[in-house]
Image (cartoon, rainbow, N blue to C red; front, side):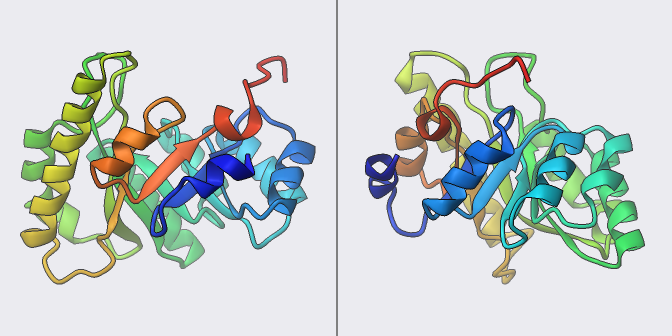
Length: 218
């Protein structure tokens, strides 16, 4: 794992995707120096939050149902997967109850698979100009997230990441001009993180390269 971590350029954040792994295994990763961990199930995230060191920065990286936001709203550091106006509205509502601002990334649908979640580019651009989006006081949009197609076609993967990177750059110059907090581009996982970094990713989400294959029996 240490050899892998050494390959990550300075300025790129590593989220250790610990979903399905035990608290003991996460503690080992923590003891090796990792501090940012990602989960995709709210109840599992709460359980691990309660058991593990409190200086861990917890990220939510999976599809989030609106009725589950309340579980993670008190402590989550960053939600990567805001894929609809309804979800952002509910996050703002639950964050207000906790009197805290929750950082979020807007998820774009960049892959060929229809099963992936996220805004289309056109829908996102329309949404960002609405009064609804501008009224939220308890969420902070700090960037974008996308998941590339699951394929061995590196040209396709690169093109998908490049599309997202261009949108990110455009929004930095327009909608979020002057907003220094809008600085994160979360793209790249164990199978494509090197391509993602070369296309401007600032956050990579890595599971199997850190923890090995997942144990789905838990």
